[in-house]
Structure formats: C-alpha cells, structure tokens
Length: 332
Ligand code: SD4
Image (cartoon, rainbow, N blue to C red; front, top):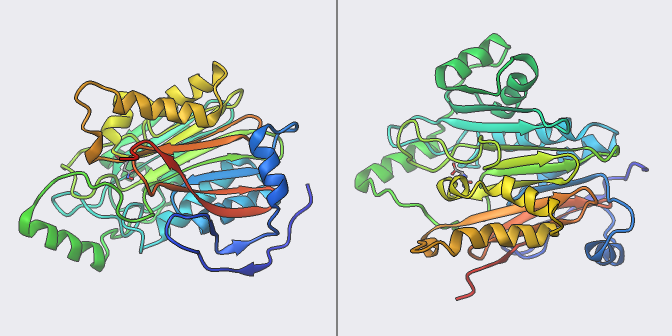
C-alpha cells in the first residue's frame, strides 16, 4: 500500500451530515460505493471511530499508512481525544462526577484477543495507554481506582488535574439543580470507541471516556468493559459502543455484534440487531436515552446504527477520512 499524501485542510460541512474531515485525502466516490456492497478484497488499512473525531482517526490512519499496527493506531488515535481539553466526555476536560471528580474509564483489545482496562481513574489523562500497560505488563486485565492510578504513576504517567475551568463551571451550574438524567446526545461528539485494521489485516480496538456527566461516585459504564463498550475477535471483526452504558452492558452489546457477525450478519445488520435488543425490551425507556454502535468485519465492511438521530462516526479507508451520519431506529 502506497503512502498517501495529506493534501489540505477542509472544514466540516454541517452537523452530522457526511462531512469532510479536517484532513482530506483524494476522494474516491466510485470505489467507496463498490466497497460498501461487497469488497472482493479485504479493505485495509481502515479506521472507524464513534462521533465526529477527524483528528483522532487521521492520527490512527497515519500510523497504519506508515505500516504500524492496528494496536498502535487505536492507542494513538484515542490519545488525541484524551488530550483534547475541549471535549467534555473524554480525558482531560471531561465532565466530573456529582462530587466534582473527573474519573476516566478505558480499555483496549489486540488482535490476539488480549484485553486491558482501567476503571474510575483520577488524575491520569492517557488512560488508553495505561490500559495497554495493564494488558501487556501485568498478569491482570483490569485495574480500578487508586490501584490503577498508582500503577500508571509507577509506569511513568504524570498525575495532573483533569478538571478544567470550563468543566468545573458546568458542574457548578449543574449543582444548582442537581438533576440527574441521561441526556440524548445534543452535540455530535462524545466517548470515543475506535477500531482499526492494519496492513496485515489485524484488527484492534480501544474505547475511552469520562463516562456520564455528574454520575454517582464510583459509577462505571460500558466503555472499559470487555464485550460492552468494545469487543474484538481478529477472526471476525470488532465493535464499539457509545451512549448510555447501562443499556449497552445489559445487552453485552459489542460482544453481541461480533457474535452476530460470526453467524453471518453484516456489520450493519449486526449493529441494527444490537440496537433492537435494547429498544424491544418490555417497557424500554429508549426514547429518553441514546446508544450508538460501530462495527467492522475482517473484510473491511463496516456498519453503524443508533437509537436516535445525530450519531455519527469517522471512517478512514482508501485514503479518505470523513464523518458519516449513522442511520437510526427512532424515526418518530
Ligand atoms: C458510559 N458509554 O460511561 C459511556 C458514555 C458515553 O456517549 O458513551 N457517552 O456509559
């Protein structure tokens, strides 16, 4: 695979609509359409990530185009959002729990089926990298809270205050009423789950979040839990989730999607079935929360589906990085 030249910067054209990412490669509409139907040859390298995350996907794509591994790509990609202080759902600048503490969750999976995660970590920004260290340098798969923070520091990560002025202000405003209700995505940016296929055809994934804003202290959602916020099986494909983690966990969403693909469903069909498991539950309150999934299979076919409108994902393939609006269940 030839390395592509990064051409020029372009602006995002409209909320959630097919939008050109901040870095444009040559746009190949014809091959795009063909490959969505049935790729004869696996499409690689490829990166897909939840929400409008052009820089994260571009960063991962650069790793892959240089011949790097899918594992390195997803780690480097997720680090972009963790360092982005303007994003209030991931890493530094994330909105805190109801006590004003920013606690982060992250996990990572490689092509060998290895998994590492950290849960409810304070004071450390790059939790995806800490999760990778748990995976590669401990006999465990999860570290939680203070133990995870101490482990990170022992591995050379810096402690820093993750609560920015903007997030502190938002929390202080929230405290005036202290209403705790999940909010359907009102912005087009949130938790990042990322899947990548490298030039060797290997698949890895990562997921990183500050969780629900103003959550109860100690609350952990789906994002760092294997099979919930993320699952990768290198023989089949991978899936990642965003939205109300409790609902994803109760249906083991990402694992379900990979298993459905194993049974022959396309990534799109599998994502739709996983959303269906949530909304078709008796007395499902789905009108009041959002869940969105992305998936990719070994051939480089991809899919995405959400309960409500305005979920989007960034996709890099065949030299193009763009934001695509997801199809959704609740059409009124
Ligand atoms: C969680 N799934 O902690 C995360 C939050 C999220 O879009 O994805 N928000 O439940």
